[in-house]
Image (cartoon, rainbow, N blue to C red):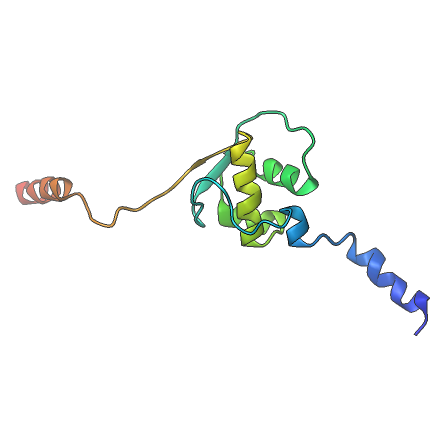
Length: 120
């Protein structure tokens, strides 16, 4: 095969950036634990000097998005997306709200519901 037959691959594939280059070799996010359903939204601060991947995350986060949605929409692996999101959180470009589900239901609330049902 000639060089011309392989040339299409590089042009059609576009620039390839390895995940470790996006995160500068880091594999673990700093700061809060970000699970798949953690909601993230841009704070509105004007970004400057950010890599394209970071800017794409900010664009997607104009409206609240989960970490899983951000990963899918930006096309980053979940681990890479978590590192990028944590970097943006640390620099106050993003804020988050974790949707945690308590392990035990509130017994007082359940008692009030039961009493309400009995009154029916």
